[in-house]
Image 1 (cartoon, rainbow, N blue to C red):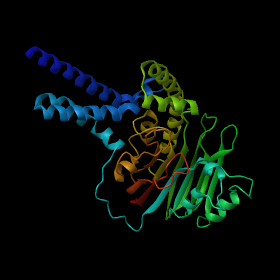
Image 2: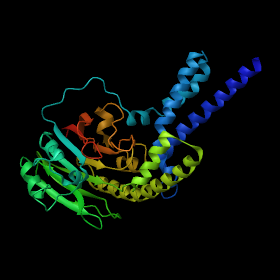
Image 3: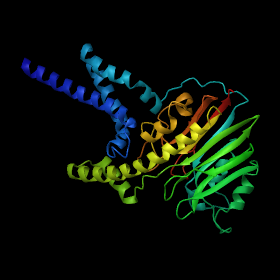
Image 4: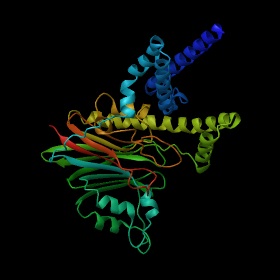
Length: 366
């Protein structure tokens, strides 16, 4: 029976080796261009599962006192530490927020949830009014012309009267949704970023904050275009991962994710160009990237220039999409070296949109 124990040990070692190798491959995936490697471009979504599996292996080897073998998982986790920290940072002791800091809020409002008003009130708009943000960047912004039952532009402007400066832009073929920036600081200019998209867009604002001009880029990058049926398929896979359903369902989802990822790659490259154009001036980039931190989109925009406010001051996975069991952070706030981030939060207190808002306190360091 001794050989049976050895066979089990070797089998577990091989499984551990494959999982560690898979984790390293997934960690490398953001460097693969989605146009050249369409299917591999989405495997970053699986990274948390590889991390959990390697942690389980690590604890198992420690439990059976196979400490030398446990070094395999430990080495993999150490090599992937920066990616793990980006996906799930831990800041248990909050830093004191300086009084001079400003608050930037980014929120995909999903058309203000159909611009619905209940007893003359829209919950998303009320949240914005009470947010105490200095700058508000909105995606999927839309208002209605029906003043009796729906939210109008006049309603929004009246509610956000504390923000004397605004910039609105519609994008896409239909032009019924877009981007908005409401600011307590002067907006010197606003322009749309030119890239290919049917329904999404980005805008660059120049804001006057103190004596400095700050470049702010608000984004709603290419959506994954998953239909209601696609999301049902995904939920069914989670509940009952049958072999045949798994094959067809995964193929269907990966194809759509790959197509959207290829489109986002070009958009991300244009946003990265806009960041570089700012040269050494202060820059803020925020919005709905429709992609996770372990993706070509995120890495291309961030480059080696920008910091992630959530990574620097947030805690936990920061899941920002709140429907259909898609447990990912796809809304981001990135900053140039001129800013110190404090208390970055994905605010789960409001669920009227399919996204949670993300905000951060930011101190300008000059």
